[in-house]
Image 1 (tube, one colour):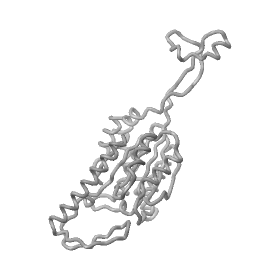
Image 2 (tube, helix red, strand yellow):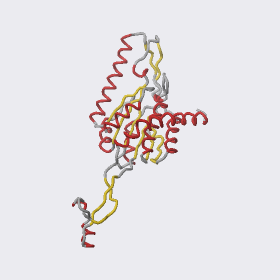
Image 3 (cartoon, one colour):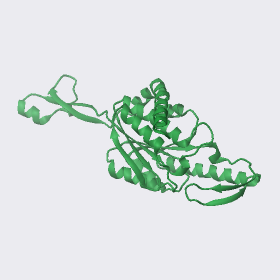
Image 4 (cartoon, helix red, strand yellow):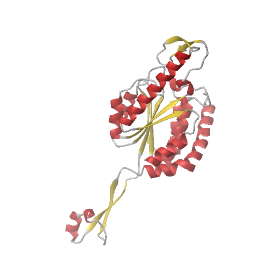
Length: 287
């Protein structure tokens, strides 16, 4: 894309997502993610009704009258968006490419976080981590994240989700909200999901095109794997072949859902072009 096309696309995404965010998501986001606990604010004289466990005994002994610690909610959160930029994500047969759809969902999440003064960061990965944008606040930062997702060089290599998760956990020690975007076409270590979900609040989002699950009857066709370079001839006119392919995809999805469930992580399966805002609204509401 040319620079003017990128700017136009980013502005279009901002307009669409900000409407959705303000109308439905921001309130639910705030309710769902209220912070990571309580932090010390100040010390003041004891008042009737204050909890005894809040008494600051050192200051009480020094001034010979009771003082209590005032605690306040630690509101600020960090959101990390992990995006698979393997070549299979640069694909689409309907309204949008997967990368464009991911950029739009990421924008909604980012603007929801920005509306609550939270930081948002980005990790782009495939067979390794290719780019990291440290968490920051603000609208301009979210627009930069959208632009980076749209303009990344999508890599002809198998995605290594494990490496991306391991990298993130090595850098971000504090509990974060983690949104993992991929089509999950490649193998991964389910143990890494369990480790990550213990440390962070993890939502895996499988972004798929309808042709990922079912191949139409187009006769004999040369199928090319954009990530490995492998090619095979297939008789797509064979009902048995199409059925076997579709069942294999369903089995892979069931295994993916089970892995996330057993890891106590959340999971969504989203078709490009569908209304993701309802799914996110329900996710925030449950949290």
